[in-house]
Length: 246
Image (tube, rainbow, N blue to C red; front, side, top):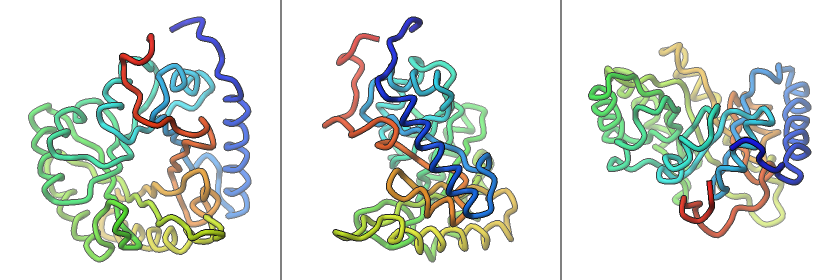
């Protein structure tokens, strides 16, 4: 893994994203350090993820469990996040890797995570994913069910609910992505504040991606999930170990 050739343009793209984050935070009267940059390496090979870590972006996210598990041992120094949906039959592959699951969206998944974490002797960290806009194309629990799910999950002995996550609907044609997303981000912030009044450990807001990070930071995001702005367009399918030499 040493002597890896540089990824063309990666340092410049990281710097641009960091400048956007700093500018957005300062405009909102926030400290840039209070917003964590999660680099989403979906479909990109491990050498790209390793280059991001080498450039100082140590928190990495994956959408697919299979791709995440394949990369874990190949990217030393990374702190991993599962930012995509999680099926119960994949829980066994996730628990025990000291990663944060952003996509808890139902009681049955909470039960499965807690049972597996109990067997492994660990506490699994999670965020509750909320479908703020009730978008049929997005995952997440209903907005009006989120506080109940937070309360249920945090009472399970081997789960730690650290915050909320959302993905806003795709904006319509010609609509500014940040402008379209901002009301949804504001709604998630208000929901987090209501949860935090009862459960002080529910702190984080995972929201905002390449097109709308400014709106997310303005509305209080503590984690932004950035893929395209850092790594360029995704490939047509998931990265698989046999496809590249590692």
